[in-house]
Length: 350
Image (tube, rainbow, N blue to C red):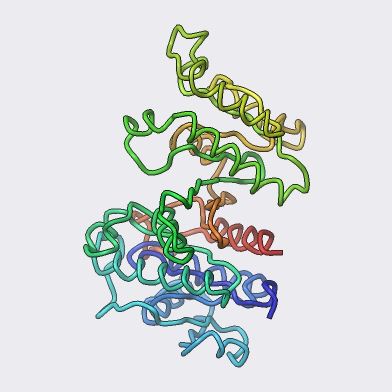
């Protein structure tokens, strides 16, 4: 069986959030696009989500079929959501409330899906949103991880029999107009500044180059954002650009990468933005920390945004939004970003 014919796994996310709802909506709105997709989650939770979508759309609820294994997928009836029960929830959790049970169930689904893709039994995984506080409240092994990225990094390291430090990963967030890759991910701003060192910046440039080169069929044009206002203004507002970032860029140039910068963070994203009237100057912006890179992408709209974890020996994509506890259970969640994540996953394994 080739990668193209293997199933795609969609993890349920936090059962108290909008993850199950956007999965149900995606199947209802674009059944052809979800051909070959299987949900890893909790069957009663997905049935509740289908009923919610049916009420909001005034259409019959899409049936949910519990599968014993991936081998059952070809025999599943059409116009049906196949679900693998890979977590334990004693009862339906309340919408919009932090729950350790929901956090633990979400983590179990992620771990099972990652191991299945790593074993070559599925093509890729698309993850619905989880809640970091619920993950922490779950306790046990799940509480060790602040999010998907770190959990998947640990699973990949175990599969490769390597220390986690030898499986470097980076977060990429992309939509039709802008793509960013982050030097650091889920940590305090104080720690993120400390993470801006030569090795981390150069490693990020190499990971971004390798990942985008495959998709573009050429070397990506990489812009690098500075850490400080005005990229340090020649050392007046900080020296990280001179002492760390510029030397890392020089090393990347010696490696043959197409890299420019460091540029002022308040203008580089506008220069990279790709619109119908003005193509962007760059294919990707490497940002120094989480909010620096994610705010510009999310400001352009989360509807088509996709989160991709780079550096893993598996394909993982995710919607560009969180659990949205404030609207969970209201039938108003938008499945567009999840559908974009599924399309991206298909492109990455093609």
